[in-house]
Image (cartoon, helix red, strand yellow):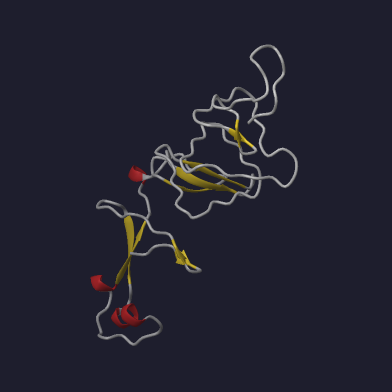
Length: 176
């Protein structure tokens, strides 16, 4: 099998029975090269043998060609085009379309600029943030909290109380 490779990186993909391919036969025996790399003498005199062939998967017959090829961007995609990673040199953007979801496994995902989320944001591990100056967080619209809420270490939810006042219309002391 031949996979595109260079600079310490290799593009691999699954190969299935029936995938179309191009088979290239070496003129001479490649056994020593296969084992050791570099320039090697042939181990025997065989020529154009099946055991000295390379298979390049990807050439397509007209009967099995893919459709919907993007002519302005590079794509790593599924054959049906429903899932892809796209690099567009004109817009200088990367687009990921993954109907089955996207999993990022990393100790840290670092975004150096603004992030806009159009869908629901759900997190499971908590949230911590800070800002050098100005407002750290601004939310427009209703906010519903389930659980306790604290401001400067003091509860401001339905568990907090105020001292020094009687119930009624007067102003209260600060939060306890």
